[in-house]
Length: 308
Ligand SMILES: Nc1ncnc2c1ncn2[C@@H]1O[C@H](COP(=O)(O)OP(=O)(O)OP(=O)(O)O)[C@@H](O)[C@H]1O
Image (cartoon, rainbow, N blue to C red):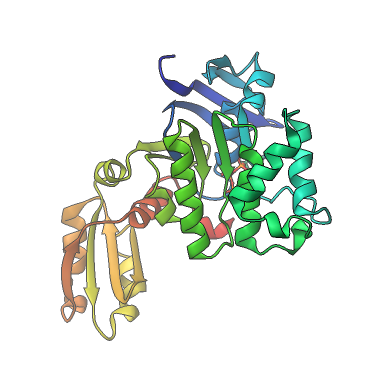
């Protein structure tokens, strides 16, 4: 196992005969922050939950924090903090009561003292008797993170933790995640935000339950072998549809006041942008970004995210 927090092979999950995770292998070293990406319904949550003993796989095996995911689920759960998609609060209990509930659930020693320390760290001591439901989105999320780390877990699972939270609160949340990782905690976080993916040590991309690619963000971009051209100008927007229909163009979209076209076959793509009808556009090759790559991966996997 070495210094791996998670090491799984061939993970499969079927619900009622439908396979939603299809043979995932993954090695996550301790103390790293990994991002799980992929379209809605691609199996991110299911994979994360299986890797950590929260859900029994239909097939496959592996270890999490040194424990067998099939046999030692209780041991793993005790050492794991899990923040689900919905903030799991009692909105009509106070902030303090919510933290006390979690302290009791994990049967922490010195419950009152731990809750006091957590409130101080959060800067919520003055507001501890307010209802948790009255907090803003950013504060709820900070409280949720504090609650799931009170028992000092070795592994933190965050399922789309920042959905609907403003940019400054997201940034502070990510600073906190990296602080936790630097103290040795391993973090798996599922997200649809590209800037968050870029803040991960490594990312894993799932589509239809298959692990399509994994690695450092720059490696994922390089390995995609995606070529991207951009054109700007007053009327570029009107060419989107025509470009989309040309062979070799995997994606054409208007993006930050420029038209981006991407594909994996350079010759076909060059031929496409050099067609006479686009002669008035000034094309420049640019480095594809992660969003270009994910859209291409989705297309290659036959997924149109808008259908979900
Ligand atoms: N308990 C369940 N019973 C039946 N089907 C399920 C169950 N849990 C998940 N699924 C199905 O498995 C598939 C993968 O779901 P999962 O929640 O893992 O995807 P996801 O990538 O996390 O999606 P999202 O980004 O929307 O959260 C979906 O089709 C979902 O409907």
